[in-house]
Amino acid sequence: MAETGFTHIEIEPGRRVHACIEGSAGAPVILYDAGAYGIYADGWWLKEALKTDFRVCLYDRAGMGASDPLPPGQTPSPDWHAEEMVRLLDAIGVDGPIILVGHSMAGLRLHAFATLFPGHLRGLVFVDAVSPRVAKAPVTYFGHRQFNWIAKATARGASMGLADMAARFAPNHFKLQGKPRADQVAALASQRHHDTARDEVLAIDHKADYLDGGAVVQFPLAIFACTVVNGMEPADAEAARLNSGYGWYGRFPRENHMSILVDVYAEAIANRIRDIHHHTRAAVTPSA
Image (cartoon, rainbow, N blue to C red; front, side, top):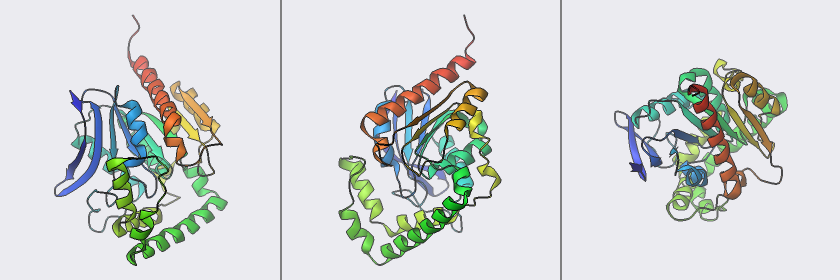
């Protein structure tokens, strides 16, 4: 039976996550995790490209978009978000391994998930995503400190009422229409959204054990790279190929950090996801 639409899913008593889930209830599951300041809508075109043969889940992280706030006193670190993804999967009845797709800052959460919950994974797709290796490099660490400052300044601007004004003129990089675009604008106008995004950036511990880069290369892996934000390397894809039988790396320098998720590139990402699915299915299916 097809499953279509927006929903609020209770993942803990009294706390809900906003999600958009489409596809057949019995199909293999794709979970998309947006980057810093992103919401479910960032993965809209990827969902459209996959919904006929997968069950695709896009969601807003706690405190972002239309999801409920984080639990009181909770730090939104990558390891906590990995646990949150497991809670979400449990709540929607997923009992098998998934393909996890992450954009931008979500790359760190993908590393945490692979380290902490390997049994939940079928494969990983990094879309112009950050890696712990780059995050720990001195030049990138300096850049992260500047991003911390920007995140604080943005949250401060939101508290002064500037976010609502800025959201009205926010460029539509993801080429969204209707509810996804309205939700994106509403998120950018929300002080809570900006505060949570700031807290996520500040919660990153570059030395955390769960950011060990060795975990992700144990799985079938596809990497789409286009800007300096990307921290994954061809060597990661090669290591994944040697360890799991599938690894792919592609660089698209003419695209930007957002365009890599729309139009023809959403289709290209979807095709790599299908490759990973077919590879892993073949690996566990006895030959005739």
